[in-house]
Length: 260
Image (tube, rainbow, N blue to C red; front, side):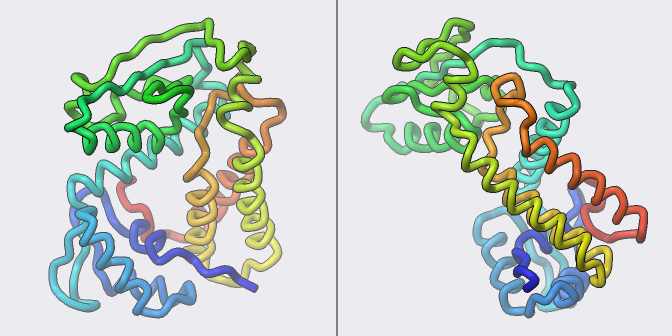
């Protein structure tokens, strides 16, 4: 049985960094992938309501474009993907430093505190005590503007988390590998399905692969490979994905991910 693809994946695949996408094209490819118009229409409304996209015109005659916040979010997602492949290629080695970030806000600014904590969590940082977060990555530049008054930072190579000092042991305690590997097993299934059932148009197959990779990488903290055991199964899955993606890209000129 072919799994349903996320309508949002189809929509975002058509949105260029600048300019707009024809809604007729989005609906046509969504229909080709087995989606009805209604779930696509609802996903478009959610993107507009969240401030990530703007619609001009109505129905299939309209266009959809990214707002600045939507563009920033997609660019952030693509930077994460780039980091994953750079780490797999050995081009982003860990410098051995842990980054500590302490969130300190007055009680009257709980909204600021909660937003900052949520941002750190979304970037893969983990709280090791109340308000104190750790990551092997420098996350400061990825945080929202204006956080400096509420954040204290430090770096260390000598981290002790409740008696655990070995870097790989710390990583496994704070970012357990099993959920990540389970997520990538679904990507393996998508790759296998694409090989064994290749009757769909190349653009539809690419959308299914994009959807599977997005789901796998969404909650992946993308730890440096020095902190994971070798061989690291997600790296192998991403390499297989890239090989399949390149092969499908060469089969046909595709309208998805223009300009990215």
